[in-house]
Amino acid sequence: MSHNTFGHLFRVTTWGESHGPAIGAVVDGCPPGIPLSETDIQGFLDKRKPGQSRFTTQRREADEVRILSGVFANSEGVQVTTGAPIALEIQNTDQRSKDYGEIKDKYRPGHADFTYDAKYGIRDYRGGGRSSARETACRVAAGAVARKVIPGVTIRGALIQIGPHAIDRNNWDWDEVGNNPFFTPDAKAAAKWSDYLDSIRKAGSSAGAVIEVVAEGVPAGWGAPIYGKLDSDIAAAMMTINAVKGVEIGAGMGAAALTGEENADEIRIGNDGKPLFLSNNAGGVLGGISTGQPVVCRFAVKPTSSILTPRRTIDNSGHETEIETKGRHDPCVGIRAVPVGEAMMAIVLADHFLRHRGQCG
Image 1 (cartoon, rainbow, N blue to C red):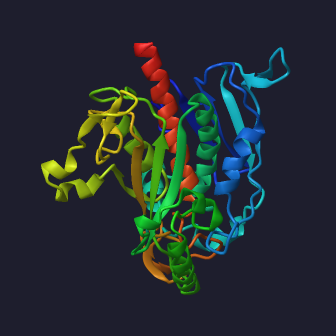
Image 2 (cartoon, rainbow, N blue to C red):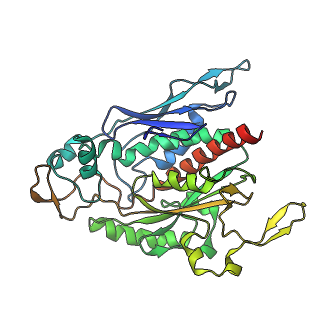
Image 3 (tube, one colour):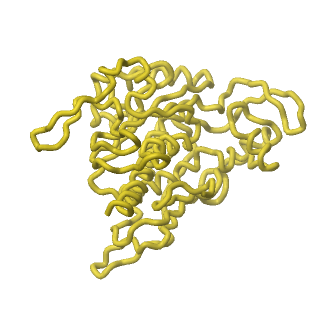
């Protein structure tokens, strides 16, 4: 499988660079007859786009998506998918390549500059090229298509920690997520984070974050043993997001501190005659197969590596030097990773829905 393509039956290939003329995605394997327009996609891109608050990069991109192929008006005049590859394009309109001229020969610590050069012998120094988080707009667009493939499934993400400051889960309110610049369900945490990130931003530094993504309405049976596990594909998907350094499903790392009695999710019969789990430490997946409970994933995003503080590094001639990053950057890149995490969850679930339907009817 190509390193620019993700998925098996529902396949997403992204293309383009941070400072190129455009970026985009090709979605292949989407079933025909699904209503799809630019409007269905744009709302999700608007959540991810930069410059929406002082806590994200001030790069200005409209992030307007165009569908170039794979849709056609049906007999009722509704634009639907045809089964052909769906090509999505997003123009880049606010590149400032000159911001990177001083560092074209230097490797930024924490970035992929050194490894890209080591692998390919050439690197796009303008914002990191292909390694830039700008690429995640393509995934969000593709994720909007994936959501249309799995009706009845609700996917929501939330920021649950910035730096060392976590939310109080007792304050969790999904309705609050859209009311603050952090996509957090805890209004009290949002107030504290504003002050914390202001101090981080003014110091020219950055902070990491933890994002939780929850998919509800996933029926029991999606995913397959042994190497097609739903949770292993979710983990792989989240690890492909820029700056992600850890992923957990359900109780995750915390499960190691529980006893067997605490961790195993007991089962009864609910009023509807269906299995009723009394807890969800498994995160909605057992043996790689969905249980019918909410599928719960968390991932940790490292602090943005582009900071104003001078850092020690080397250049591509092997000389030791110093670097300080100029330009426009997120003091906490984890904020804009929330809609990206949702999109990757949608892409995995759409793929597993089609794989389950293919094997089990």
